[in-house]
Image 1 (cartoon, one colour):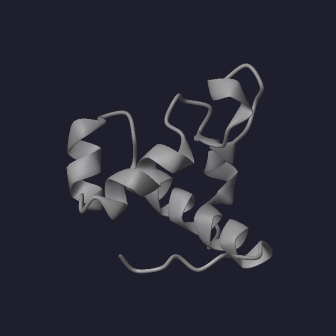
Image 2: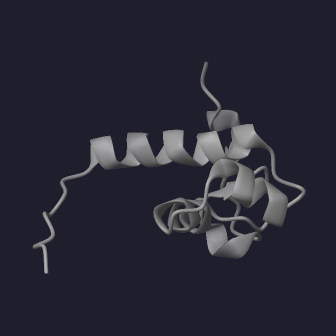
Length: 77
């Protein structure tokens, strides 16, 4: 089941970057929170107007975007 309908982009909201359900929660921010070690439950506790499917939609969006683009490997420091 795709959750991509939750991801929107509108030039009037957050400079046209992809956000969740037209809210000012950019996909980028949700991914950064997850990368920092927050769980979905932690994120939902901090942002009460988000739903679990919103975070999963951000992950689904990121998976599709990264599959479509050439990636450049980062060197481990």
